[in-house]
Image (tube, rainbow, N blue to C red; front, side, top):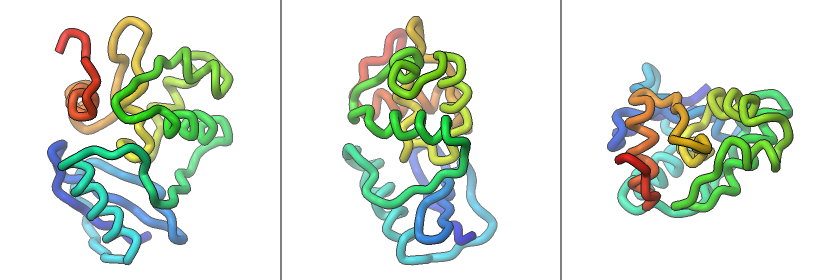
Length: 151
């Protein structure tokens, strides 16, 4: 699968494409670098997003997961820029419990683009699977204009 890396305020990120869609975004610099038209467009979009965040990622994504995980991830994509939802609110939309939503959110293979950082606990931020953990989540939320409690 073709991969392309970029520098970001959160450190190096690597995007992965399969069959004309984005399937992963990982922290770290990928070993192999392939400049496909889609990966170059996504890299450029992310570079611009990290200058001025915009709402919706405009390129096709096909993250691999269970039907339930995909339902949760689709609900995450509906959270507007600058807003958050609780795990409980996502469970009300996608089904399951706040815990099952948390597990699906933690398995999101395309963080930032599927904005799992916008999901918070009822009493606090919850976790984050990014390389910098909760610090990355706080940075992303503040960057998008969310007032982060305790920050």
